[in-house]
Image (cartoon, rainbow, N blue to C red; front, side):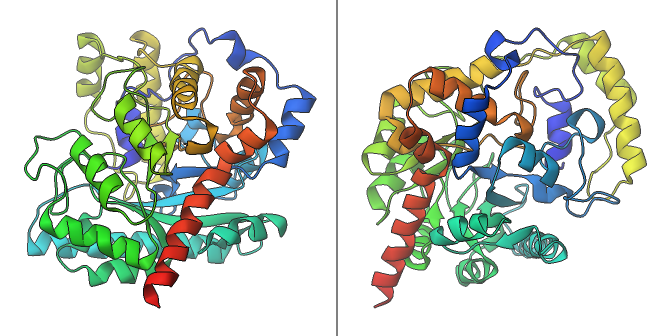
Length: 408
Protein backbone atom coordinates (compact mmCIF):
# COMPACT_ATOMS: atom_id res chain seq x y z
CA UNK A 1 0.00 0.00 0.00
CA UNK A 2 1.28 3.49 -0.81
CA UNK A 3 2.40 5.96 1.85
CA UNK A 4 -0.51 8.26 0.96
CA UNK A 5 -3.07 5.58 1.63
CA UNK A 6 -1.36 4.49 4.83
CA UNK A 7 -1.74 8.08 5.96
CA UNK A 8 -5.37 8.22 4.85
CA UNK A 9 -6.29 5.11 6.78
CA UNK A 10 -3.99 5.58 9.75
CA UNK A 11 -4.09 7.66 12.88
CA UNK A 12 -2.95 10.83 11.10
CA UNK A 13 -6.56 11.02 9.91
CA UNK A 14 -6.41 13.45 7.03
CA UNK A 15 -9.60 15.39 6.43
CA UNK A 16 -10.54 15.01 10.09
CA UNK A 17 -12.78 17.73 11.49
CA UNK A 18 -10.75 20.35 13.29
CA UNK A 19 -10.23 19.37 16.89
CA UNK A 20 -9.58 22.03 19.52
CA UNK A 21 -5.93 22.94 19.03
CA UNK A 22 -3.55 24.28 21.60
CA UNK A 23 -3.35 28.07 21.85
CA UNK A 24 0.30 28.02 20.78
CA UNK A 25 -0.61 26.37 17.51
CA UNK A 26 -3.39 28.88 16.84
CA UNK A 27 -1.46 31.99 17.81
CA UNK A 28 -0.31 34.17 14.90
CA UNK A 29 3.42 34.17 14.21
CA UNK A 30 4.99 37.50 15.17
CA UNK A 31 6.87 39.50 12.56
CA UNK A 32 10.06 39.02 14.56
CA UNK A 33 9.65 35.23 14.72
CA UNK A 34 8.80 34.98 11.04
CA UNK A 35 11.80 37.13 10.12
CA UNK A 36 14.02 34.93 12.28
CA UNK A 37 12.58 31.81 10.66
CA UNK A 38 13.25 33.17 7.18
CA UNK A 39 16.84 33.79 8.20
CA UNK A 40 17.61 30.15 8.96
CA UNK A 41 18.41 27.47 6.41
CA UNK A 42 15.34 25.26 6.90
CA UNK A 43 15.86 21.57 6.12
CA UNK A 44 13.62 18.54 6.73
CA UNK A 45 15.30 15.14 6.76
CA UNK A 46 12.36 13.02 5.64
CA UNK A 47 10.04 14.12 2.82
CA UNK A 48 7.99 11.25 1.36
CA UNK A 49 6.64 13.58 -1.33
CA UNK A 50 8.24 11.66 -4.25
CA UNK A 51 5.37 9.21 -3.95
CA UNK A 52 3.21 11.88 -5.60
CA UNK A 53 5.54 12.77 -8.47
CA UNK A 54 3.95 10.18 -10.76
CA UNK A 55 0.36 10.98 -9.77
CA UNK A 56 -1.82 11.84 -12.73
CA UNK A 57 -2.33 15.60 -12.89
CA UNK A 58 -0.30 16.33 -9.76
CA UNK A 59 2.50 18.90 -9.92
CA UNK A 60 5.07 19.90 -7.31
CA UNK A 61 4.81 23.55 -8.33
CA UNK A 62 1.02 23.80 -7.88
CA UNK A 63 -0.56 24.53 -4.53
CA UNK A 64 -2.45 21.60 -3.02
CA UNK A 65 -4.24 21.09 0.28
CA UNK A 66 -4.11 18.21 2.71
CA UNK A 67 -7.89 18.35 2.96
CA UNK A 68 -8.28 17.99 -0.80
CA UNK A 69 -5.70 15.45 -1.97
CA UNK A 70 -3.90 14.29 1.18
CA UNK A 71 -0.55 15.91 0.35
CA UNK A 72 1.53 18.03 2.69
CA UNK A 73 4.41 19.37 0.58
CA UNK A 74 4.55 21.42 -2.60
CA UNK A 75 6.49 24.48 -3.75
CA UNK A 76 3.93 27.13 -2.67
CA UNK A 77 3.65 25.61 0.81
CA UNK A 78 7.44 25.22 1.03
CA UNK A 79 7.68 28.95 0.34
CA UNK A 80 4.98 29.77 2.88
CA UNK A 81 6.62 27.65 5.55
CA UNK A 82 10.16 28.72 4.73
CA UNK A 83 11.27 25.17 3.85
CA UNK A 84 14.43 25.55 1.80
CA UNK A 85 14.86 21.87 0.97
CA UNK A 86 15.54 18.48 2.42
CA UNK A 87 15.88 14.79 1.83
CA UNK A 88 13.38 13.47 -0.71
CA UNK A 89 12.80 9.82 0.05
CA UNK A 90 13.16 6.72 -2.11
CA UNK A 91 10.83 4.45 -0.13
CA UNK A 92 10.04 0.83 -0.97
CA UNK A 93 7.47 -1.24 0.92
CA UNK A 94 9.11 -4.36 2.35
CA UNK A 95 8.54 -7.55 0.37
CA UNK A 96 10.04 -10.97 -0.15
CA UNK A 97 13.71 -11.64 0.57
CA UNK A 98 14.14 -13.54 -2.68
CA UNK A 99 15.97 -12.94 -5.95
CA UNK A 100 12.68 -12.01 -7.60
CA UNK A 101 11.72 -9.73 -4.71
CA UNK A 102 15.09 -7.99 -4.82
CA UNK A 103 14.87 -7.41 -8.58
CA UNK A 104 11.42 -5.88 -8.37
CA UNK A 105 12.41 -3.67 -5.45
CA UNK A 106 15.60 -2.57 -7.21
CA UNK A 107 13.70 -1.53 -10.32
CA UNK A 108 11.04 0.28 -8.28
CA UNK A 109 13.60 2.20 -6.23
CA UNK A 110 15.69 3.18 -9.26
CA UNK A 111 12.52 4.38 -10.96
CA UNK A 112 11.63 6.46 -7.91
CA UNK A 113 15.11 8.00 -7.98
CA UNK A 114 14.51 8.84 -11.64
CA UNK A 115 11.17 10.47 -10.79
CA UNK A 116 12.92 12.71 -8.27
CA UNK A 117 15.52 13.75 -10.82
CA UNK A 118 12.83 14.30 -13.46
CA UNK A 119 10.84 16.54 -11.13
CA UNK A 120 13.94 18.65 -10.55
CA UNK A 121 14.79 18.74 -14.26
CA UNK A 122 11.25 19.79 -15.15
CA UNK A 123 11.49 22.74 -12.75
CA UNK A 124 15.19 23.56 -12.96
CA UNK A 125 14.49 27.22 -12.24
CA UNK A 126 12.99 26.30 -8.87
CA UNK A 127 14.78 23.13 -7.68
CA UNK A 128 18.31 21.78 -7.86
CA UNK A 129 19.80 18.43 -6.91
CA UNK A 130 22.20 18.61 -3.98
CA UNK A 131 25.12 16.23 -3.47
CA UNK A 132 27.30 17.77 -0.76
CA UNK A 133 26.65 19.53 2.52
CA UNK A 134 27.90 22.79 0.99
CA UNK A 135 25.40 22.52 -1.87
CA UNK A 136 22.50 23.36 0.45
CA UNK A 137 23.64 26.91 1.20
CA UNK A 138 24.81 27.51 -2.37
CA UNK A 139 21.49 26.43 -3.89
CA UNK A 140 19.53 28.34 -1.28
CA UNK A 141 21.49 31.50 -2.07
CA UNK A 142 20.56 31.08 -5.75
CA UNK A 143 16.87 31.21 -4.83
CA UNK A 144 16.12 27.54 -5.52
CA UNK A 145 15.08 24.64 -3.29
CA UNK A 146 17.76 22.03 -2.68
CA UNK A 147 16.90 18.37 -3.19
CA UNK A 148 18.94 15.71 -1.41
CA UNK A 149 17.93 12.07 -1.87
CA UNK A 150 17.62 9.38 0.79
CA UNK A 151 16.71 5.69 0.92
CA UNK A 152 14.17 4.46 3.43
CA UNK A 153 14.57 0.68 3.54
CA UNK A 154 17.63 -0.68 1.74
CA UNK A 155 15.83 -3.88 0.75
CA UNK A 156 16.10 -2.89 -2.96
CA UNK A 157 19.87 -3.42 -2.78
CA UNK A 158 19.26 -7.14 -2.36
CA UNK A 159 22.51 -8.92 -1.67
CA UNK A 160 24.50 -6.86 -4.18
CA UNK A 161 26.13 -3.99 -2.33
CA UNK A 162 27.48 -2.52 -5.57
CA UNK A 163 23.96 -1.15 -5.86
CA UNK A 164 24.75 1.22 -3.00
CA UNK A 165 27.30 2.84 -5.27
CA UNK A 166 24.65 3.01 -8.01
CA UNK A 167 22.26 4.83 -5.69
CA UNK A 168 25.07 7.07 -4.50
CA UNK A 169 25.69 8.03 -8.14
CA UNK A 170 22.01 9.04 -8.48
CA UNK A 171 22.44 11.39 -5.52
CA UNK A 172 21.57 9.33 -2.42
CA UNK A 173 23.36 10.74 0.62
CA UNK A 174 21.34 9.22 3.50
CA UNK A 175 20.17 5.61 3.88
CA UNK A 176 18.36 3.47 6.42
CA UNK A 177 18.83 -0.30 6.41
CA UNK A 178 15.31 -1.36 7.33
CA UNK A 179 11.65 -0.36 7.60
CA UNK A 180 8.68 -1.94 9.43
CA UNK A 181 9.83 -5.52 8.78
CA UNK A 182 13.18 -7.24 9.21
CA UNK A 183 15.15 -7.68 6.02
CA UNK A 184 18.47 -9.03 4.79
CA UNK A 185 20.42 -6.23 6.46
CA UNK A 186 18.95 -5.69 9.92
CA UNK A 187 16.15 -6.01 12.44
CA UNK A 188 13.27 -3.56 12.52
CA UNK A 189 12.01 -1.90 15.69
CA UNK A 190 8.53 -3.23 14.87
CA UNK A 191 9.35 -6.86 14.12
CA UNK A 192 10.56 -9.88 16.10
CA UNK A 193 14.39 -9.95 16.09
CA UNK A 194 16.14 -12.45 13.86
CA UNK A 195 19.61 -10.91 13.64
CA UNK A 196 19.74 -9.15 17.02
CA UNK A 197 21.06 -6.09 15.24
CA UNK A 198 22.72 -6.06 11.85
CA UNK A 199 23.11 -9.23 9.81
CA UNK A 200 26.61 -10.10 8.50
CA UNK A 201 25.52 -8.54 5.18
CA UNK A 202 24.21 -5.56 7.11
CA UNK A 203 27.62 -4.96 8.67
CA UNK A 204 29.06 -4.81 5.16
CA UNK A 205 26.22 -2.43 4.22
CA UNK A 206 27.27 -0.14 7.08
CA UNK A 207 30.93 -0.20 6.05
CA UNK A 208 30.04 0.52 2.43
CA UNK A 209 27.87 3.48 3.46
CA UNK A 210 30.83 4.89 5.42
CA UNK A 211 33.15 4.32 2.46
CA UNK A 212 30.88 6.21 0.08
CA UNK A 213 30.05 9.04 2.46
CA UNK A 214 26.39 8.07 2.82
CA UNK A 215 25.03 9.02 6.24
CA UNK A 216 23.49 6.10 8.16
CA UNK A 217 19.86 6.57 9.21
CA UNK A 218 18.60 4.44 12.13
CA UNK A 219 14.93 5.47 12.13
CA UNK A 220 12.81 2.28 12.03
CA UNK A 221 15.78 0.17 13.17
CA UNK A 222 15.79 -1.91 16.35
CA UNK A 223 17.58 -0.80 19.50
CA UNK A 224 20.34 -3.32 18.81
CA UNK A 225 20.87 -1.83 15.36
CA UNK A 226 21.08 1.66 16.87
CA UNK A 227 23.65 0.49 19.42
CA UNK A 228 25.75 -1.27 16.78
CA UNK A 229 25.54 1.63 14.33
CA UNK A 230 26.78 4.07 16.98
CA UNK A 231 29.60 1.70 17.91
CA UNK A 232 30.73 0.67 14.43
CA UNK A 233 30.11 3.65 12.17
CA UNK A 234 33.23 5.68 11.46
CA UNK A 235 31.17 8.86 11.49
CA UNK A 236 28.11 10.09 13.44
CA UNK A 237 24.69 8.74 12.48
CA UNK A 238 21.23 10.26 12.10
CA UNK A 239 17.72 9.25 13.06
CA UNK A 240 15.90 11.03 10.23
CA UNK A 241 12.35 10.79 11.60
CA UNK A 242 12.07 9.48 15.15
CA UNK A 243 10.60 10.55 18.47
CA UNK A 244 11.14 10.31 22.21
CA UNK A 245 9.94 7.11 23.86
CA UNK A 246 9.74 8.99 27.16
CA UNK A 247 6.90 11.04 25.65
CA UNK A 248 5.11 8.09 24.05
CA UNK A 249 6.19 4.49 24.57
CA UNK A 250 6.13 3.06 21.05
CA UNK A 251 8.71 0.73 19.42
CA UNK A 252 9.34 3.32 16.70
CA UNK A 253 10.48 5.87 19.27
CA UNK A 254 13.92 6.03 20.90
CA UNK A 255 14.48 5.75 24.62
CA UNK A 256 16.63 8.27 26.46
CA UNK A 257 19.60 5.88 26.49
CA UNK A 258 19.65 5.69 22.67
CA UNK A 259 18.98 9.40 22.24
CA UNK A 260 22.02 10.08 24.41
CA UNK A 261 24.13 7.48 22.60
CA UNK A 262 23.45 9.02 19.21
CA UNK A 263 24.15 12.53 20.50
CA UNK A 264 27.24 11.57 22.49
CA UNK A 265 28.70 10.13 19.27
CA UNK A 266 28.02 13.41 17.48
CA UNK A 267 24.87 12.30 15.68
CA UNK A 268 21.50 13.97 15.22
CA UNK A 269 17.96 12.95 16.21
CA UNK A 270 15.37 14.49 13.88
CA UNK A 271 11.97 14.65 15.52
CA UNK A 272 8.89 13.47 13.64
CA UNK A 273 5.17 14.14 14.00
CA UNK A 274 3.94 10.55 14.31
CA UNK A 275 3.85 8.12 17.25
CA UNK A 276 3.15 10.96 19.67
CA UNK A 277 0.18 9.51 21.57
CA UNK A 278 -2.22 6.57 21.51
CA UNK A 279 -4.67 7.00 18.62
CA UNK A 280 -6.98 3.97 18.76
CA UNK A 281 -9.59 3.46 16.06
CA UNK A 282 -13.15 2.84 17.24
CA UNK A 283 -14.98 -0.29 16.02
CA UNK A 284 -17.51 1.95 14.29
CA UNK A 285 -14.82 3.84 12.40
CA UNK A 286 -13.09 0.63 11.41
CA UNK A 287 -16.35 -0.87 10.15
CA UNK A 288 -17.16 2.27 8.18
CA UNK A 289 -13.85 2.07 6.34
CA UNK A 290 -14.37 -1.60 5.60
CA UNK A 291 -17.76 -0.73 4.12
CA UNK A 292 -16.39 1.76 1.56
CA UNK A 293 -13.93 -0.79 0.25
CA UNK A 294 -10.27 -0.77 -0.62
CA UNK A 295 -8.65 2.59 -1.10
CA UNK A 296 -7.27 3.34 -4.58
CA UNK A 297 -3.54 3.09 -5.14
CA UNK A 298 -2.20 6.62 -5.48
CA UNK A 299 0.42 5.47 -7.97
CA UNK A 300 -2.03 3.95 -10.44
CA UNK A 301 -5.42 5.51 -9.68
CA UNK A 302 -6.70 8.66 -11.36
CA UNK A 303 -6.91 11.88 -9.38
CA UNK A 304 -10.71 11.67 -9.63
CA UNK A 305 -10.69 8.22 -7.99
CA UNK A 306 -8.47 9.47 -5.16
CA UNK A 307 -10.61 12.56 -4.58
CA UNK A 308 -13.79 10.46 -4.57
CA UNK A 309 -12.33 8.19 -1.92
CA UNK A 310 -11.25 11.20 0.14
CA UNK A 311 -14.81 12.55 0.07
CA UNK A 312 -16.10 9.23 1.42
CA UNK A 313 -13.44 9.36 4.09
CA UNK A 314 -14.47 12.89 5.06
CA UNK A 315 -17.98 11.62 5.79
CA UNK A 316 -16.56 8.92 8.07
CA UNK A 317 -14.30 11.45 9.79
CA UNK A 318 -17.29 13.67 10.51
CA UNK A 319 -19.40 10.79 11.83
CA UNK A 320 -16.67 8.96 13.73
CA UNK A 321 -13.94 11.53 14.46
CA UNK A 322 -10.47 10.03 14.83
CA UNK A 323 -8.22 10.61 17.80
CA UNK A 324 -5.28 12.74 16.68
CA UNK A 325 -2.09 14.01 18.21
CA UNK A 326 -1.59 17.78 18.39
CA UNK A 327 1.13 20.33 17.80
CA UNK A 328 1.71 20.34 21.55
CA UNK A 329 2.39 16.59 21.46
CA UNK A 330 4.96 17.18 18.72
CA UNK A 331 6.57 19.98 20.70
CA UNK A 332 6.63 17.74 23.77
CA UNK A 333 8.77 15.21 21.90
CA UNK A 334 11.01 17.93 20.47
CA UNK A 335 11.48 19.80 23.74
CA UNK A 336 12.17 16.60 25.68
CA UNK A 337 14.91 15.64 23.23
CA UNK A 338 16.38 19.13 23.23
CA UNK A 339 16.54 19.19 27.02
CA UNK A 340 18.11 15.72 27.12
CA UNK A 341 20.84 16.06 24.49
CA UNK A 342 21.09 19.76 23.68
CA UNK A 343 20.33 21.75 20.52
CA UNK A 344 23.60 20.68 18.85
CA UNK A 345 22.22 17.17 18.26
CA UNK A 346 18.57 17.69 17.28
CA UNK A 347 16.91 18.26 13.91
CA UNK A 348 13.46 18.11 12.31
CA UNK A 349 12.13 15.26 10.17
CA UNK A 350 8.36 15.43 10.54
CA UNK A 351 7.57 12.58 8.09
CA UNK A 352 5.58 14.82 5.77
CA UNK A 353 3.60 12.85 3.18
CA UNK A 354 4.53 9.66 5.02
CA UNK A 355 2.02 9.75 7.87
CA UNK A 356 3.11 12.96 9.58
CA UNK A 357 0.98 15.96 10.36
CA UNK A 358 -1.04 16.61 13.52
CA UNK A 359 -3.75 18.99 14.68
CA UNK A 360 -2.30 22.49 14.40
CA UNK A 361 0.69 21.29 12.38
CA UNK A 362 -0.90 20.02 9.19
CA UNK A 363 1.67 20.63 6.45
CA UNK A 364 4.98 22.39 5.75
CA UNK A 365 3.28 25.78 5.69
CA UNK A 366 3.08 25.45 9.49
CA UNK A 367 6.84 25.19 10.08
CA UNK A 368 7.21 28.75 11.46
CA UNK A 369 5.16 27.64 14.47
CA UNK A 370 8.09 25.53 15.60
CA UNK A 371 10.45 28.48 15.46
CA UNK A 372 8.02 30.63 17.44
CA UNK A 373 7.67 28.01 20.16
CA UNK A 374 11.41 27.39 20.41
CA UNK A 375 12.12 31.12 20.58
CA UNK A 376 9.51 31.41 23.34
CA UNK A 377 11.23 28.55 25.18
CA UNK A 378 14.48 30.52 25.20
CA UNK A 379 16.40 28.92 22.35
CA UNK A 380 18.74 31.29 20.53
CA UNK A 381 19.19 32.05 16.86
CA UNK A 382 22.34 29.92 16.90
CA UNK A 383 20.33 27.06 18.42
CA UNK A 384 17.56 27.40 15.84
CA UNK A 385 20.04 27.55 12.98
CA UNK A 386 21.60 24.31 14.19
CA UNK A 387 18.27 22.55 14.74
CA UNK A 388 16.78 23.58 11.39
CA UNK A 389 19.69 22.37 9.29
CA UNK A 390 23.15 23.05 10.65
CA UNK A 391 23.41 19.87 12.70
CA UNK A 392 22.43 17.57 9.83
CA UNK A 393 24.74 19.33 7.38
CA UNK A 394 27.57 18.96 9.89
CA UNK A 395 27.09 15.18 9.98
CA UNK A 396 26.85 15.08 6.18
CA UNK A 397 30.15 16.91 5.89
CA UNK A 398 31.78 14.56 8.40
CA UNK A 399 30.59 11.55 6.41
CA UNK A 400 31.79 13.01 3.12
CA UNK A 401 35.15 14.08 4.59
CA UNK A 402 35.66 10.56 5.95
CA UNK A 403 34.92 9.08 2.53
CA UNK A 404 37.52 11.36 0.92
CA UNK A 405 40.10 10.35 3.53
CA UNK A 406 39.27 6.65 3.17
CA UNK A 407 39.62 6.89 -0.61
CA UNK A 408 43.17 8.14 -0.20
